[in-house]
Image (cartoon, rainbow, N blue to C red; front, side):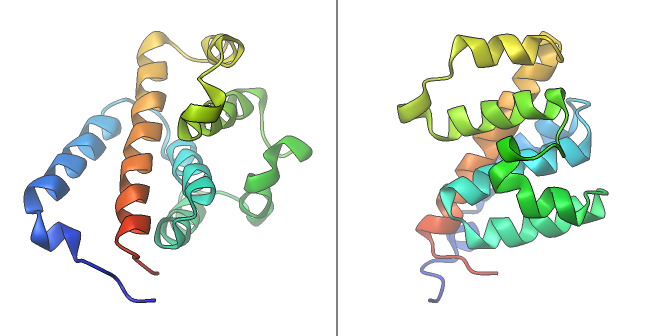
Length: 144
């Protein structure tokens, strides 16, 4: 499969808008390793090969272990993720599969046990941003 459109070149304003979201995300104070888990899990769900490849590599650079990366798609079945990370991963899945999951209150409450309101906004921004990148990646048939 080859890429359909070099969308960033065709629409530099759209690309700049997404970079603006990334810049806002960088100011949230959330640790990079957690953001990479968010990016990777959403990309797995969305089937974005380009983003899965990129964010698995970025997660390694951020210090993620192979065991955690290899089991991220089945995180509920492992002991590799903390309660804090599990709350985030559940939130990622609910927001990525919004039509099915509807962001349940119990998941939001679990986030509140570990994160401030500002951090929850940052987490939600991270999920929204990677889902947007994934739609361009999958829609434009980007490959690693």
